[in-house]
Image 1: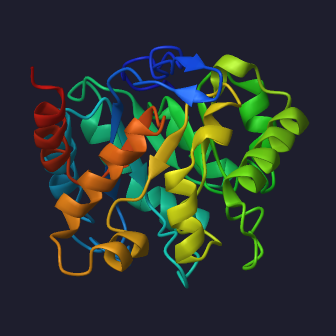
Image 2: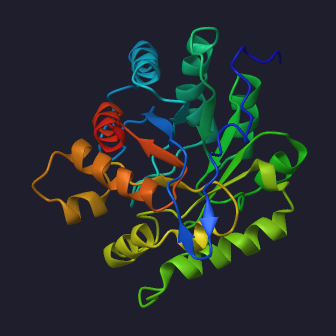
Length: 279
């Protein structure tokens, strides 16, 4: 099948480096913003809003206009208690949107899936980055990634769940990701790591991870943080606007070393970043 026309994704271009002096992590380069587009009926915050390919296209272009440097497309909810969907259903939701965006979207598309057949088809239709919440643990996914030459986001939390009494989650997550990367044997410049906020963690563990990203940054890979609209946001900011609170927490994660920030809405974050960096 002929690949659709999407921009190539160079992982080195998606990976602002963090300056390290001893154990101190200085201001990272401006963050890479990943806009979230859920093509699902049951995602926890926007389920059903973008099932129509036309609505999805409009939202994708809006996210790009708002400053997204990556568009993350997901066609199966990964919220707690979600109902798994078949490969056929995931592709039925995903491929029409990829086809509509080809030639219109100027930023690379990341496909959020743990199924090898879905990943293969998505890349045939133009996806350029693989975002796998299960860290390539499901059938065929490791082989697909190992044969390719594209960035891979490996997330902790589905393939390995933290014990509820783990009081050092940053160290545990970093150690697991390091072992998983070594096991997979992927080139260093293709790997992005995600601590998996809200996946197999308690709220105190989520807060501890966000407060101490240093062990993950020290692995030497770009760190992606996805906390937008999650339970930790509502837990810490119960009365705040969820997108503003998500932006405030994402800004703190960037200051702690995160290189890529995954958000549903980008304008609140950009407003905060301008205030933060204004002379």
